[in-house]
Image 1 (cartoon, rainbow, N blue to C red):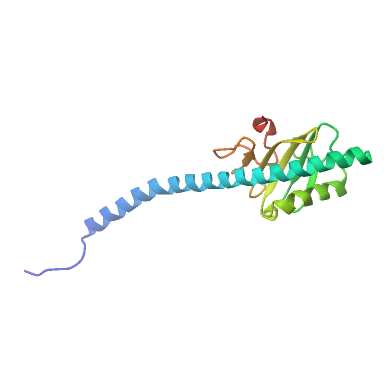
Image 2 (cartoon, helix red, strand yellow):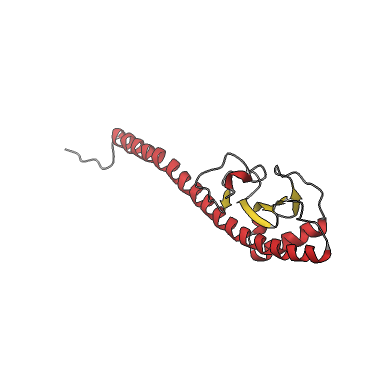
Length: 170
C-alpha cells in the first residue's frame, strides 16, 4: 500500500472554515478595542486641553479686567481648533468673528501645553472665564470623540465641531 503525504480537500475546507469563523469573531472585537483606545486617548487629551484652557482663561480674565477688553466677557464662549487655526465660534462651530489676534494668542497658549494640537481638533466651552467642558478628536470627521470633565466611553454620534457641549457640562 502506498502512503501519500498531505491533506485531503475536505481537511483543507474544514481548516479554512474554522479560520473564517474565528476571523468573523475577532475582527469586530479588535475594532471595538481599537475604538475604545482611541476614545480613551481623546479623553486624556481633553483633560490636558481643559487644564491649559482654564489657565489661559484665568490669565485673560485678569488681563481683560486691567485693559477693559471683552474677548471672553460675553458669557458663553466657544473656541474651536481645527488642527491648524483656532477661532471663537458659536455652539455649532460657526465663526463669530471675534478678535483674530486674541484667537491666535488663546490657541498658542493652549497648544504650548498640548503638544499634539497639529494632529487633533478640539472645542472648548467657557462660561464667565471658567472652562466648563472640552471635546477632542484626531480629525474633524472622527467619531472617536473624547471629552472632559465627563469622559466618553463609546463612539460619538456627532463630530467634535457639532458635539453638544451641554452633554458634558457638570
